[in-house]
Image 1 (cartoon, rainbow, N blue to C red):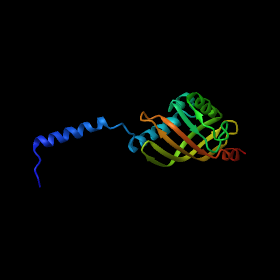
Image 2 (image 1 turned 90 degrees about the vertical axis):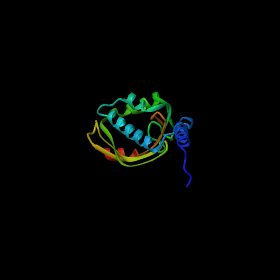
Image 3 (image 1 turned 180 degrees about the vertical axis):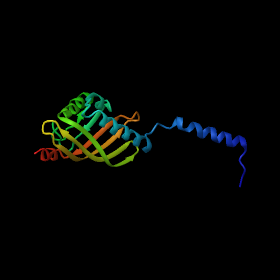
Image 4 (image 1 turned 120 degrees about the vertical axis):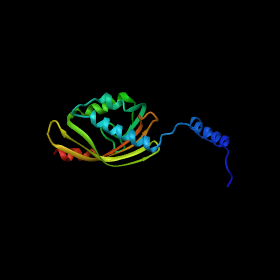
Length: 164
């Protein structure tokens, strides 16, 4: 086995140390997992009873998209919600709930993408009835930890069924 000189070793270490400076920043699964944890915690902290729709919208990038493929009202037909102002209006609609929270069941993270599966649940203000429904978020995060795109899979008919 050939011996490496101290000078060669130090040169190799120096080159390896600066390589990350020349590699574009990438979001790794560990980062995305932490971003997802922060997102769900902030989402729950800013939903009823302490609804702050602006704070929730600020979890999204300025040019973000949120999709509701099952056509969640008022965005029937699966049209995307684009930008924070639209998201503020969307999240403001949760003022009809006494409380609202998301409880995790499972998550999968890869690169800057995450799939979060759980239960959305809350108590309706007018009826006092407790509602619980499955929900899935398919998220893409920016390197800054903001949501770039979110697809939300939820069957809102379950809400109506439970409020009867």
